Length: 253
Image (cartoon, rainbow, N blue to C red):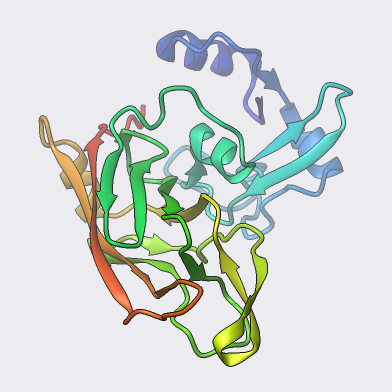
């Protein structure tokens, strides 16, 4: 982690929060400017009380491989918001041991689905992932995005209204030849994962919710899809989805 604060400030910060990984001091934002990460919406004259926010970077995470090469990066425009570590790993397609221990299984005539979140505990400013692992039953396919008129499988998030949604992440599909109509369409026949990233904004409402002892954040939505086999296309379906997350109080000091 690289921060623009002085070493004594960083030392107090890491000790107070029990942070054990290295945190580097970038006084003057030298490295931040070199990597063109400086938040240029702020000026040296901007003040938040006695605090000057000038010099802060856009918040983000670089992912490096074993050769120390940057292979991916995840950045946000707002300094109050952050990707969670689990969300980053999920977006990279990595498996996280135990993340689906509390997954909810849903079974229909056409598919079996597991739903879970990247994080069981969340706070205002978190960007996390809502996951649906889908397994079509033998002989069944569902539709991927593409140039066709079938209902594409998708995750719909309905409530709470304050969540800010990112585009739904789809894996690569396969091309299927539907013989009854002699057409080729993009589908999923093998197990696949849908990842819906959501951001919990920093607001009075979310801060008030996060400080309620034992408070939960319940996300309601649905899985929409149309399933077909080699002979029949079934009517479009909709399956209710729910994610139960626990609030963590935001620490500001």
